[in-house]
View 1 (cartoon, rainbow, N blue to C red):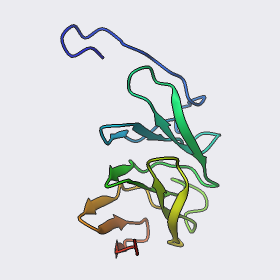
View 2: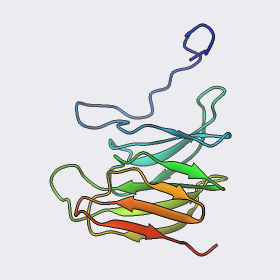
View 3: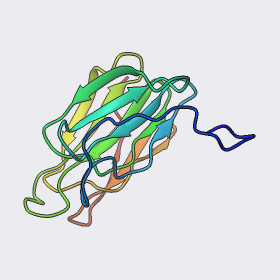
View 4: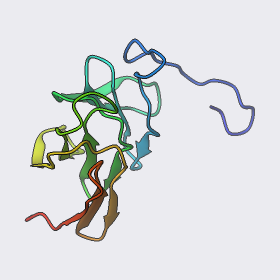
Length: 139
């Protein structure tokens, strides 16, 4: 939206939404790209250019993304996993903001629906099982 007028600058449909799927979580912005995760097929994290909404890159994942991504210092981090059904699968995934390649991931064995927090070089995230985890990935 245009900050001065409220007019729509661009709009983009990335996935077909429904009552429980689509783009559920808040997007993130790092000064270069806007990052949005999809709970509907294709389950992926999208990096969009803020000027026109075009796709800078897309990284597909196996499980839905209900987690809001967090972006900073060249990395975007998000969680995966279902909101119903098989809640015993999930992961925390970190991608390069430059091109979307996977930097690291961790299998949590539980759905990760909360958005991660970046605190310096530490990533903190909670999962459906009630575990709060802190990661300090190797650079």
